[in-house]
Length: 126
Image 1 (cartoon, rainbow, N blue to C red):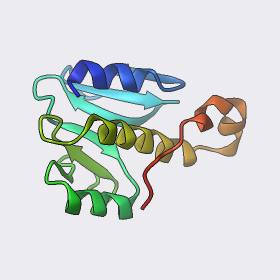
Image 2: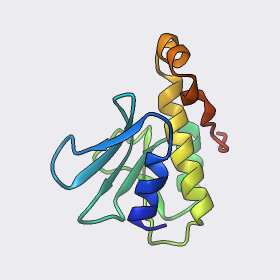
Image 3: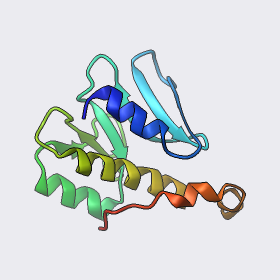
């Protein structure tokens, strides 16, 4: 996947928007104000996604393109090299997983008010 495909896929998820919370290079994707993905515009191979801690370790062990994220909590965030050999389907699965991980931590009130958030499920399991 290239940066534009990633951007389009992230923005296709319910209640998602993009912004630049830190500088003009780090593009963040948020669901209900919570970041679930970020990508560097100057170095798009720096793409980070939230992940269940057990699954994060499994993915890092099985794919050299997936590492602990450099500037994020390494327990929960993976850095993905999109220019490696990962299939697009795995990248989209990891995006969905990240989104679902963020949504499941939201208050039940928000989940009830915005049921479309729960339509995005993760095909990945720890």
